[in-house]
Amino acid sequence: MSTLNLGRTVFGNPANTGNLITIEEAMSLLNEWVPNARLQLHMKQVAAVMKAWAIEKEMADIATASKWELAGLLHDADWEKHPDKHCRVIIEELEQRNIDPDVIHCIASHGPRYFGVPPVKKMDKMIYAIDELSGFIHAAALIRPERYNGLEVKSVLKRLRTPSFAAQVNREEINEAIAGANISLEELIAFIIEHQKAVE
Figure 1 (cartoon, rainbow, N blue to C red):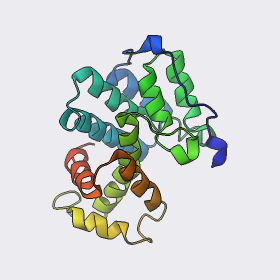
Figure 2 (cartoon, helix red, strand yellow):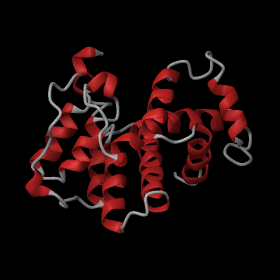
Figure 3 (cartoon, rainbow, N blue to C red):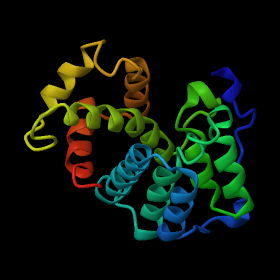
Figure 4 (cartoon, helix red, strand yellow):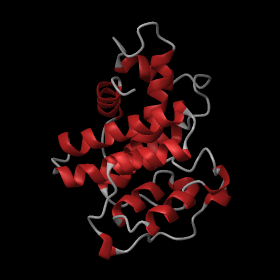
């Protein structure tokens, strides 16, 4: 996985601050780059949670919340077709489109152990915290007949303590991200359950 290291920590041009593509344009890119419906769902869920967190917890305005949402929506855009160049391809695409460097840096920092880009701003720290946990919570919901209905924080915590469940999810990374964001695991689990359950 070390081959994914991006070899840099500066992305985009500050002159492009505020430049975003619309969510419709981002979805068009997703439909072209990500045929896998499950991966698309994951990205949509992360986007929804990121946007909601920005608005509800960071008191962000619409423009800022849109940056959080866009980063969440595109963070894995190149994973399916370019797993050996994950993050590199989407970053280059966004740089060519003159997108806000905050969005690009956020995407680059969503897996610091792999990409070598530490989270700096709160948006970076939250995508790192939300990404793996979002997928884990969705997996926990899928094994329940009621799916998200009635899914409790304590149930998710119990699954996290069960190494054989969703074994590919790195618990150390989740704990590292939570600590870096200076939030509680329980708070974030509850927030993710609430805000991603209706995403389809």
